[in-house]
Length: 341
Image (cartoon, rainbow, N blue to C red; front, side):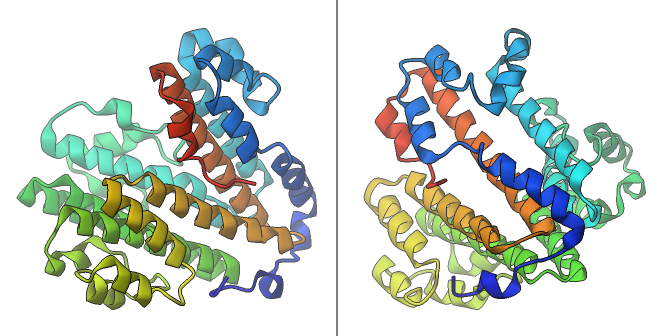
């Protein structure tokens, strides 16, 4: 990794000795790429679910007739988030994992307020704060009733979307606030790894916006409005290469750890107009970064990395099981599965 030498910043916070042992044991139960590919090769949804019968997901299958397989996946994520809450000695830091869903719910609440539509199916109920709190504050326009970290983005996003009627403008305002909160918490905690994780997360979001903007042919002057500050890659560098041919963009990233994402993802977009390869390479990069916690002995970093790895696993299973339900071919699915080993 260009931006982080994990063995030099590895955590040895002995307060987390017990928690780290629990996490190491749980990491052994994460589904590897080979297991996910076998599930993708299943004949149908029923067989795919049977292949999960000896995993942590099976404990939720007693409810599958009532809540479906998506409900089971949601329950597993709730279980993991609850476990992380129990293991954490630094909730301001581990709350990053739940607050991500609060900021998502805020986007939904803004859209509901402006459109007048009922979007309750888009809310996540495993966020830190109840979606009902967000909805009530938005409807009554009593934004001061919101948690502190959501007040400013809610106010700015609501004003922007009300004027433009473009929900995407509110989304970027909320995303910027979210990453600012995450970065502040990582820096306050004093973890080089967690700060680098958030900045990497920002870079990956910006690369996705950069590549989508190129594909959609947006004007170069509009690109900065889509990007988030404080990543490792300067926004000015992305703007300067935005209109260049892919070969020249790749050359600009020649010495960047993100070169493979640009090369593989960019070529697939230009060749086939698909973003599957880009999303897979983004997932691959994030997973490889999270795996750097293997260098760590103890620490809250292990807990956060495990939570994000588990979240990615659940995302992959949602994709695979939904595809099995629709009869999508296994080979199509395999191209989306990240390198989770």
